[in-house]
Length: 357
Image 1 (cartoon, one colour):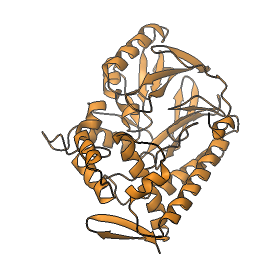
Image 2 (cartoon, one colour):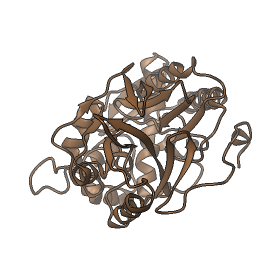
Image 3 (cartoon, rainbow, N blue to C red):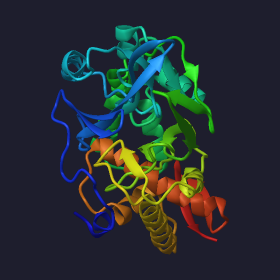
């Protein structure tokens, strides 16, 4: 456990749900944990006891990736962990594959509606199908030809890494093979009634286009999605689909929307363990990014690419999946300084380089 984690409290200790099981974390709230085929090997999903139109059942928050073993674990939960009641609706926090991958299957399995933000629904629906029929290499985000061109422009020079990213053109649809044709839109400040309690929507930016978190004042519980995590830093990246974006200030500004929540709020994150210490963790994240911005600015005493910034920010060896997020995050810090006017950018020999003004 790192020093920052020691400043947080974990009410459930090291307890976590076994595969195919759910455990209670608050009144009417159950925790499910599903495996992921990444270095980040799990995602937390949440079942909320509910009643809609006179029907008793559950609202599910997030889904896991589309994999047969994950479906099999869901079937175990349906059989043994739901008190014989159905899933009434599926809420998805954002469009990343581990959160939305099984939305189509779950909604179809239970004839349940999908609730999601407009922006993330639209991107997930677009990306779950190849951009050009028959072109598996088109891709976008973290894999395929379009993503590769973006990373090369920002200093990815390793031929092996380039080829692996090119081969990942089917990455998103392999984890999100389909999306429901219709959805119910969630917007910032909406109040959703779930199980007789009101859950307030807090939309955040920077990590995903329009990320939804849910807070219940009655329970003092925050389903934070990926916006606030106890152990790892939330990824904030510039990807090919929005190459001139400035997501880091958006993310840091979004964290301020949690300032009014109680200090003893129980945070239910998508990765890691439920914890208390929300404001401490937000302060840690703000300090972390301030330090990274100082490091990046110091490195820009000469013209540098985002690829050259990666070893400064990430000291460990990175697999291709991690490398795409690392370059994206390095670029997010460069863009923050560039938009602020502290850096200038030039495009030479097909590559962007940043240096101090």
